[in-house]
Image: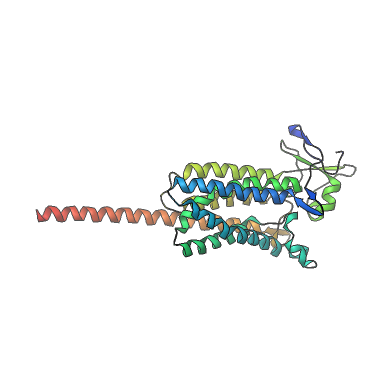
Length: 307
């Protein structure tokens, strides 16, 4: 590779020269990562407005909803990342507030955002499950877009690869920026590049597929909340698999020589909890249906008896 800022997908014949991670206005640097995150939120907002209209909700409620959960979601995502990579911040606490360089954990954002939406729904006397269903497809579409911030930051990549979607990065750039990740990659002497798995691309594609599935499923749900639970389950499964390829995992603990990534643990929790709640909701719905049916039959029988 020729330049420190080049990115290539050689097996696809794609070569990008001087890919910027940001730009400056005066003395202020703006990261493309941050712009993409903002665009993801805006995309989710405008699409949730359309979904609210389709489901006979008040679109204005989602203006207040976004104002209520966006900041908590960003704070939660940042805290999640900082907590599980504390060694990188303990000697420079001010760097905790610099999110323009990246460093957001989606699970922290989802958990904090859901909590904020729950409080919002209680205060406004709205249906919490219905709000989650309205936002779920838009959330995962925002994630699909947001992952491309990792492309511009040259982060969230996997180990060595030579497959069709191999991503090629300048070795010097990776050594300088991601020394911890390099420890999990084998780089041959004399090469000025590394070929890795573009796990950000895998996850972006995963999110797009989940978005399509949710759009189809939303018209067939039986109980409010099912769309969000399906999102949590499908994303958890996909993230568990993809996380195993990444070289920048946040490690929860180690069992002997095996590192346990926190995102895989949280993914399993999301999968199990969403499945339990989904099945519980369906059972409850079935019981209510048959109970109502029995009551109707009893009423008919009583009417005939009176006659």
